[in-house]
Length: 471
Image (cartoon, rainbow, N blue to C red; front, side):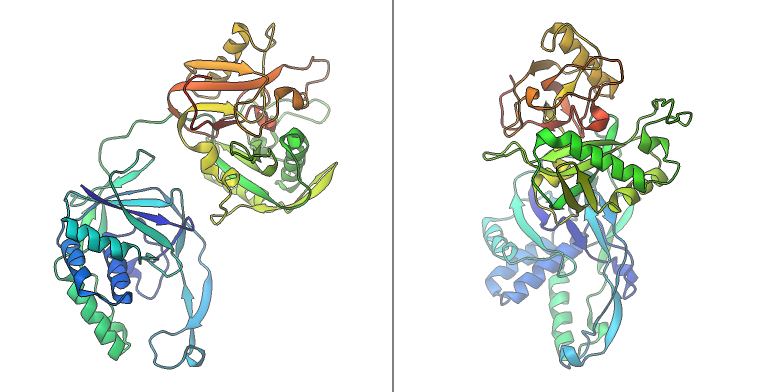
């Protein structure tokens, strides 16, 4: 087996479907094997087109079409730009400007794997490695990538495209003679910058995902996160999460359509201010995003997130995105934050949804779990059973191992006693809360938030990596 990993460094791809021509409207995803080959040829040519590296490209073009492993891509709204025409010999500032669009997509996973059922000779690997180190983009020049050889494709949520299928998506592939064709087309274009000298479509084949279904990874009530980051304002620790999340929820309700929909308010349609009635339907929850689980983690809040339940329709999801995107500041009793929705360029792990959703077997709380019943104590067998049932209630399997404690397992998280009590209904006693460590018999996907405080940010879990399987 021979495999190449392409990592999109910005978490976004800029490329257009070949058949669109100059009318670029749709991003190409996954990247076609021919696009990858063209990028390698361009990197080779930019480096001087050394003859000793040429055999690596000749070997690659002679191989059968590769299998492609990739995540999903969400097309972004097209933006019109006016740029100098490239097909001219004059200086850029003297060229006419024409309207252009640059289709792009935000990626659910930055890596794409191309896998060939072949073993290249050592000389080919050495030459190819020199070309890969020069390859900086795939598609448009702003589609920054890193390309390297790998031994295997890691297990993850891949969609797998298999070549030579009877039906599916038609993709462009390299073929014997493609290197010479690209070189000749480039030579002609240098002499006469004309569209007719651009590379041809080349050969194609049908790609189709495998028919067999992959094992379903359990996931709870919530499946999406909208991340709002703190841009300006005073620092706040996890101890102040309730006040920040209260401000966040208040801002959402203020900007929501009126009357506020049930999936945002958490109240049934029959509810009134004098007689509130809780919704029985899953609704949007809020959660803090702290800097934790690092050697020098402080527990400071980097932002907040709205957790969307699976039961929302596409229209309801769009409404949630519109409401959260419109929030520009959060006002707390102790200060004001300027906020904005985190985008694909955000590199801080706390603000990356994958930090909170990546499938794993061991999870632990960053905010205390709040009991939805009243066990005799917060750490005995009765309390453990309440926690197990809470996981089942949100659609997850029971953990096979469980531990409850006032101390946290994540670095930077305060003790459970440092958090203010969870809000209680009038006339009801305060509920116990504690930190939870849980190990499941199989990987589960996040976001995971459980217990009586799940809709206002308590009982929020994060995967626990690099630790033993025992608490």
